[in-house]
Length: 387
Ligand code: NZQ
Ligand code: ZN
Image (cartoon, rainbow, N blue to C red):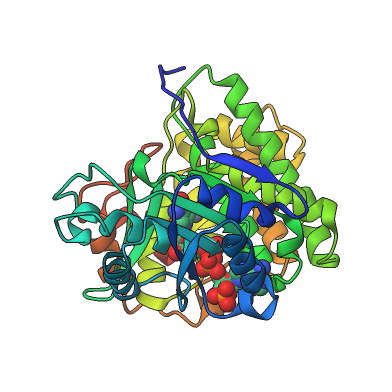
């Protein structure tokens, strides 16, 4: 196990009615807040009005900016930054899923900065301050509610990049599973794949003697696998929605990272897909992850065999761990398909004409992944395996 520092300071308030705390929690940070949201689901459900009422009751002035699209765009972030400066806003409150939260984080970072925001994403500058961020989560998936990461798409050149800094970790996250009852099956499924992917990126590591985090990863994956079908069968199943919502946070709050090194190559490849084709992140991962697994399985068959046995209940073949390993990948794919998720690019109507471009962009800053470092040819081969 590696040495590590673990610090996750986000205050999580979980359960029915959690969103009603938004006024009190924000008032402890700010007098005037930017309320940031997406394309309409929060207005339709009545959540928007309840949030505004809670903030008003706590004496917080509100400036609203909606319209965040999935795979959030830099242009709207810039609009938000200008609005925050003009209105002298001192906190940003995100009401939505990962895209809204990431957009809110980028605004909070850019508003007090004296360099262009994208310089941070390109590693040309380091921030020393950001506005405080609060979250009301409506979609368990990205884990952005407690992560220190913002992922933004720059329409110029279609670059989708993540930026990680402790300043971006939300001060509070309000998690009410009932707010997820309105999620359509595609979003519920895509969200669960993203959570599984966050665990798997950490699970497939070269680090030895990581028994506790292996077991935590396995428990998180098994919980997601057990509860996704329940939530799909009955969208108002509170118990299943609650398990998924907490799994979203646990999968990506850095606890499962402790003492080990994550891979993240599949995420980088998926970000190229989202950037060019605007696919939902979780759907892209459902396509990329199995192909990545098939590409790297021989690097450590026993780890893949452990995944197969402990997560997918595959009977181990002690004479042929490779067979056990491959059966685990097959069960993962079968599970995705049983939940109605696509696992090939063909199903997304994406051809092979831009594989070269995606592979080149994915490794622009050098090889990706740590479990098996991948170069341009590997990424291309993996994309070919996604067909
Ligand atoms: O825009 P509205 O109308 O609100 O609709 C949204 C959106 O269309 C809808 N939705 C959200 N909550 C709903 C709802 N519909 C009905 N009922 C509700 N309760 O869902 C759609 C998708 O939302 P989005 O926020 O895009 O999904 P998700 O949470 O999966 O976020 C994806 C983004 O997060 C990034 C991804 O790359 C992608 O851009 N990620 C961020 C990470 C981070 N910051 O740590 C890590 C992840 O790996 C990921 O890269
Ligand atoms: Zn993800």
